[in-house]
Image (cartoon, rainbow, N blue to C red; front, side, top):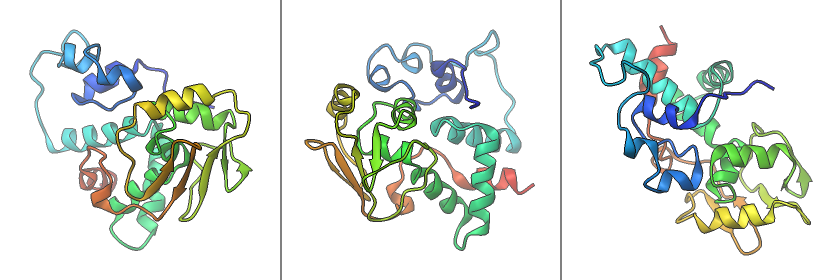
Length: 206
């Protein structure tokens, strides 16, 4: 399975914004964005000529890195979103939010999306009582996500819940029993992804 193995802290510095890719570290003074608030590389402190294309590209890269997806995967989500009724940008974000690995993270069962994806990939979570080990699995309203009984990751999951200050309003989490429920699909104002999705749609529409 292909995956992005580039340094995560450099990804945040490239976008000049915290993408919370390393869990607890992102909440401390060790965060690289706090320590070095400029792009990586020998020309990171130089001036960059802004353009419409660059702004669109940076928004797309930011969203792709935020959800930890490769370019081909991200573009497939755009294609799916463009075929749905409604606003394409909102459809895109909704599809990304309804991924199982993202839902596990939003419920507070993973300190980062990468950790949540690994937990799903190793079959630590059940959806409606059935094992699902596909991070891209699309959850639906009324789906129940729970930690598998006798999972060896229970300590990691409980440690992640300790870092969770709030849960998205479209989800219901029970941190004591390590279960969660999808109440409904999220509205745009309930998605705190730091991107302007319209710029992404403009980029792909060219």
